[in-house]
Length: 226
Image (cartoon, rainbow, N blue to C red; front, side, top):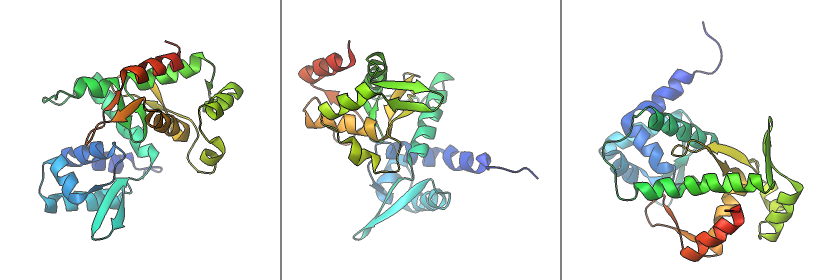
């Protein structure tokens, strides 16, 4: 008998087309109801409930009750990372959806991956912070440098508050469209929140697309050294 983690069970949970569509929708970081996820998956509410029960039992999603409704979210950032990696593999080997929408180029340019910036601009952020030596990468992962700590404070990010959470401060996340790393972790999320607060960018309603204003994009380019 084989020992160790059962990846086949996890892969089976992620591999069903309807469940995959539900999980992709949850990459937005928003909590969604079973009815909303049924629409995303193109299945009946009853079928969606059955899929969600399996995902909940497998600890892929977490239910939250609010009033009369139950909302679902991804159970952790490791699920987000796994989905992004799988999307990258699917993109590389040509297993892409036949239907594409007008927002697809914008998704590739700048989008939300759970709660941090992804797409071409997410990769530019990671590379820019690295070139400015504000973050560094080694065998232990990604970390803020001393200069990075000073930058974060000056940029209005409370690192002490972030460090109180169990979530890593910085983490690499493989971008499915660019096939390079973008910055995840609580610091990555805090940076995107600051972009919103400063008016550099906004998230489009009912979408993962992040759209920068002309002034915001210029400020972003200055930040990453482009």
